[in-house]
Length: 112
Image (cartoon, rainbow, N blue to C red):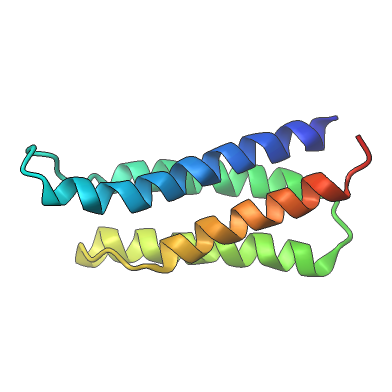
């Protein structure tokens, strides 16, 4: 039951992260006075890392574990580059998509 809830939270956070990453550049085109805040990306990274840690703590499937942590690392690289160089790296999209895929696979593999 706990893993089911964690997967639901993980899927939700990853989907919101992906929506944020796709919609934000489009909103930048419209002159609304909105500026990019990398702390939002950091918040998604922290939530994702905590959920991935809790989900993978007792996981035996190595390739799924690798998918989860590779996705978190891609997001972390993107957030770090954004903080240091103020450049948006598209690794964020791949990381969010990987987290969504990993949580969906993990959710489907559990007997509910």
